[in-house]
Length: 188
Image (cartoon, rainbow, N blue to C red; front, side, top):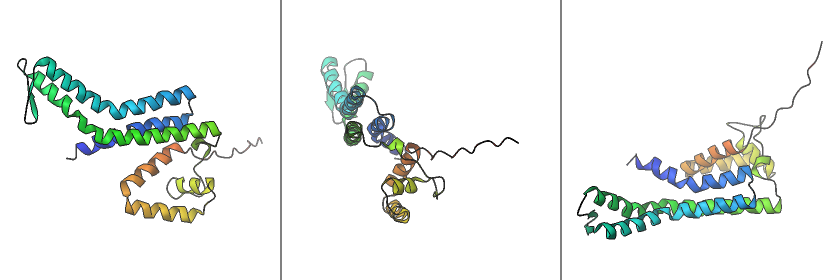
């Protein structure tokens, strides 16, 4: 069971990772369209594999017995077709991932069209950080009280730890550290 959790998490984060590329790199409209199409393809890919498996079962003359396919010869065809047909279960993870990725890409596109400040214009604080400065960056960007943002973050981390931990780590990577003020060199 523990082997499937990293696989499911990796599959779930595939399309949102595509959206993060668009948010952080601000591609052209054509780039947004390509990433959007990749998101949609990512979501339906397991269904396409299953459809291909059913086509192969007809071509190889395989017959379904309970939950496996038996093919006349060679025997490995049955294993291949069975694996392909049951790939549709991966869509349970990839379709919600594709939806989240598409939403992220639409948000990125709106930010580009409206010329709103992107996430790359938000900096993690050097002075007001407790862990990484993410809460201070959010508070500064949307003019919220920093203690309120921290309280909400800790509360959400207790209630839904996995999601908030992932989001916090992602924001830690997405927001660059505030540039340091360069002090002029004093020549003596």
